[in-house]
Image (cartoon, rainbow, N blue to C red):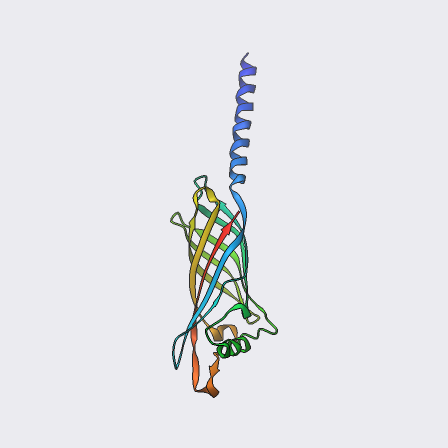
Length: 194
């Protein structure tokens, strides 16, 4: 009788542990992008400028709490075609594409190497940013907002970079009369769904 009680407790404990492990693994989700926005804002000797892209790819392995809040990013890869960036002026676009060397390096990419997600959804991510064929280690900060149950998550943030850090010469226009500043702000937002 004593042995059968121990065996029943042992089996119950094993089943309980299996349920906990299964629940933990059920919270890991691979999601794909449904909406993407990338903006590059800068200055020039004439006026401020902006280029936008609304297409690209992003895949991610994310971890959610049972309540549906983002708790971790296991992997994330984000790619935007450099020539999908558009301004209001086609001449500016052409000069930007030359500066970005898009014929040889058609994509701008970011791949997370490590990250932390705080309880309020704030993200700190280290990763590899590639622009114009030059890859640099960068730290990004972002904010995540998850829908109930972890069905989707919106991630948005921004980063100021210097173009010359990526061997991009700031474009000039009108035979050098207008020059862009070296610093640009890259703002990104994307929605990931199961």
